[in-house]
Amino acid sequence: MQSLRKRDYPQFLFTTASLSLNVHLTILRICLSSRIPMYDAWITALHDASNDRTVKIVAVTGAGDYFSSGNDLSNFTMTKSPLEMAEEAKSLLLRFVAAFIDFPKPLVALVNGPAVGISVTTLGLYDYIFAADNATFHTPFTSLGQTPEGCSSYTFPKVMGQIKVSYNFILPMAFLKILLV
Image 1: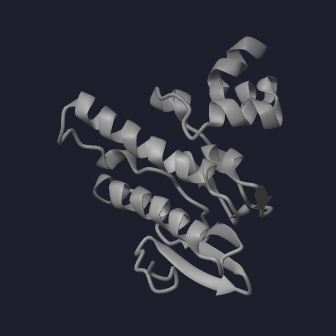
Image 2: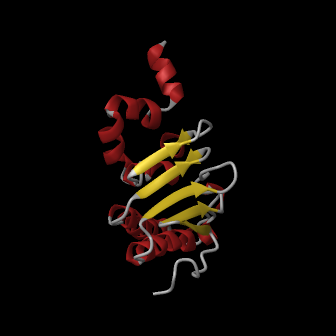
């Protein structure tokens, strides 16, 4: 197995401190061309860290001011049929989420700023989450006409309760304002 410190993951910066592996997300937006390699790199990095006896904990943070700004949806062009794109995305997302679920060591999120999309929805799969004062969390499901991903429809209600989840993540604010007026 190639050492995590020597492996080339252009999307991540790996640093080690004592017995931990620190992962810094070095790209803020994920375009279609780098989407698959980025997710595959995550899957491989978590697999490799789980098999590296020198790694006892993995800490994930963003590089710069953002934890992650999520997928850059303007780059999703129809190069394949919608069915092909959906099947490919489903397979990739299942492997991606399974890598978090199956990770046998403590996984820590150090949310250093705004987080959007899948970087938010997978937080429920981390063992510990620490958020900076300027951290914000945005899941644009309803505005994009998408369903929740990253097990968030299961983990968020368990952690926050259904009412908070509906208010903060599912119902659009415009709809809530109409209901509350």
